[in-house]
Length: 384
Image 1 (tube, one colour):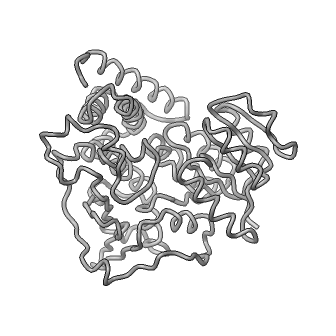
Image 2: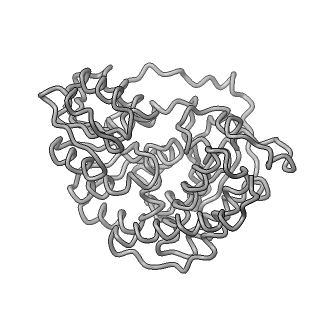
């Protein structure tokens, strides 16, 4: 029986993970849950799974409704207190954005295997977290479909024998839209992802392909790859989740219909593979799989990942923070779609990289980047 703590339990990854766990009561139990503001859903999950502790990180005032058998915590610090009380065997970090970083550090410092859906953790502090992982010999299990695919392809392989990886992306909802209409894109349009069902921030990131930029950084840290070894391809069908090319010319790929439950189950059950009633891959139905190069004019976020890799230090934290701010403003209808990446690029290029020796350094870079992003928008009052 593996004790699981799920962070971001009311989000897309969290709810799918709980469905998987509910179907396998002999394999998993839930010892801890956290959510941001969805108190009613969190309490409903608590009644179903009876965890030792839960945390509502972004709100308060619901403790009286919590069952007496479950400890209640609140606020950002409450997530770490909840983890201390829950004593998990594995942490599934499905928190969105920079808010998930401290929980990732807690997991690695306490030598608890980390199933990581919060890609921002490695984007912001990859060098720091990977050092913790190595020191404690604590695995980071990537939940993202692309990195889970690569993880499986290189399992048992010598990473020094990897020539390159091919990260695939659907291209989002605007893969064929005329570039001269990008200024007219609305939040509703950007939230209509063609193949995946995800939260708002990740969905907008898929439309700008900033998500794929983050995945370049994530792959760099997870698999110890240079920027020249990481290539992005547009793959509209989202069937080939990524490929690995080795020095002998062999290419391994992981394929499957788009279903996040598959990588979630893989990480929950690792190192075992567990049965799952999935939709089988039909090679006849998907006989026409296509790939294309990334059009930089359409996806200007992609080059920013390589810029951040070359700049090193806290540049990833700056990239993430500026994107969080700009994505939020776009969803509120305050800026145009092209302004998301345009302003992020300006903030990144205007930043003097600093080194990271602790999370305080990361948080400092995060704060400064957020301020810089807001200042950039304030200087362009007619953006819209």
